[in-house]
Amino acid sequence: MAYLRTSAMRRSDHGRRRRRLAHLESLGLRG
Image (tube, rainbow, N blue to C red; front, side, top):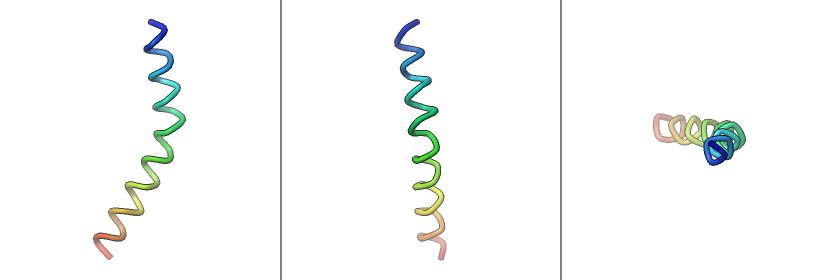
C-alpha cells in the first residue's frame, strides 16, 4: 500500500508538468 501512495504522489506532482508539456507539444505539432 505504501508504494501506491508514492505512485499517487508522483502522479499528482509530475502529472501537471507532463500535461503541460504534452499540451505544448501537441500545439507545436499542430501549429
